Image 1 (tube, one colour):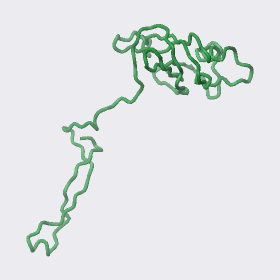
Image 2 (cartoon, helix red, strand yellow; image 1 turned 90 degrees about the vertical axis):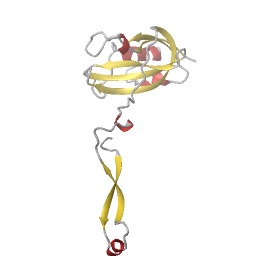
Image 3 (cartoon, helix red, strand yellow; image 1 turned 120 degrees about the vertical axis):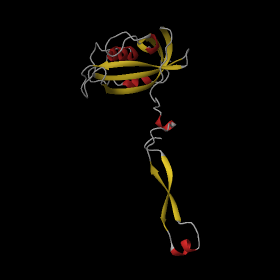
Image 4 (cartoon, helix red, strand yellow; image 1 turned 180 degrees about the horizontal axis):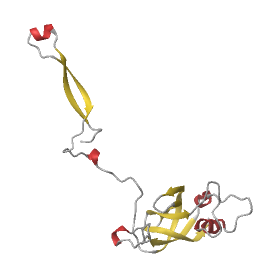
Length: 181
């Protein structure tokens, strides 16, 4: 049982002269306390994964729609900020992620023209941004956009070493084409 598991314990609060004299049981009350029992196993002790679902599908091009944008967050394993887009693939009925890595991008700084994010944004925008124009990720979520995306397998770990077959997962590597309504 975990430290937070509750186990009822009966505690005597004492005897009253009248109840003790008549042969009644002492006054008792039940309280709940936290108790750690290292031998007991409980579903509360289980570590339940709550992260994203990983899939491994054949590499290739798929039709998809972008359903969500996740802002940049620091990823300690890679030592950099990373953002992502989630794409729902039509043929597979699954969601895969496209990752954007920003090495030393500071708050308010815009990804440069050679970045994967900038190149994807230009493709969706159908052209380069004008000076002072926002390059917000909201453009990826415009209703009606159908994407042709290139799906590859994540074959290397954070240290650049080859992953074993069972640890590989599919991801969106590139936006190949954007179809507008």
